[in-house]
Image (cartoon, rainbow, N blue to C red; front, side, top):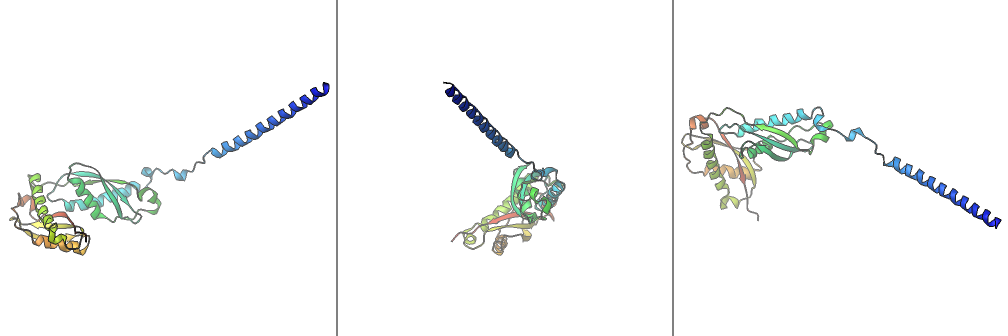
Length: 249
């Protein structure tokens, strides 16, 4: 009886020691896991690009470049603005342009065209590449010039009609059957009788597109007299973006 009691006590002591050992083992393991789960703060991974010196200066140079080009596209003069988001690659090439807002429906695409014309831009500084390359860089485009036309809406409508006649030529079956797709910027100076006095194709996608636009201009029939020619069109060329397509074989 006494022996059984001693044996039972020994078993209980051994179990208790084993339980304590097991508990300690788990406690050590939990402590190791807890330490491993604590993240190590690396300040180099947390860069607030907006506050980095040089970022705002770089985007401002983009705005100036686009503003210079948009003024070349505005004929007759207007007073509009737009906000664009540009994405650039490492060499400063334009990957995409998004119209965020515009004060007039037609000015957004015009500002985007000016951004295309201004590319490529200066390559982003290497130390700022993380903040600039492939990121949406928001810029403001302004065409705030003194308007000399009394009726801008009527003058702009006349220019768009002239553009539509050129587009109708390059979209004709004869032109579509020829190779050459893309776009080009056509700079046109109109006379008081509506005739094209001078024309020049700039930044065409390829020689075939440039040739199509040139020939289309030569085939344009008589236009009506431009409204307010003295104040809106005299010595003021109109720059138009002309898209050209070709039928796929």
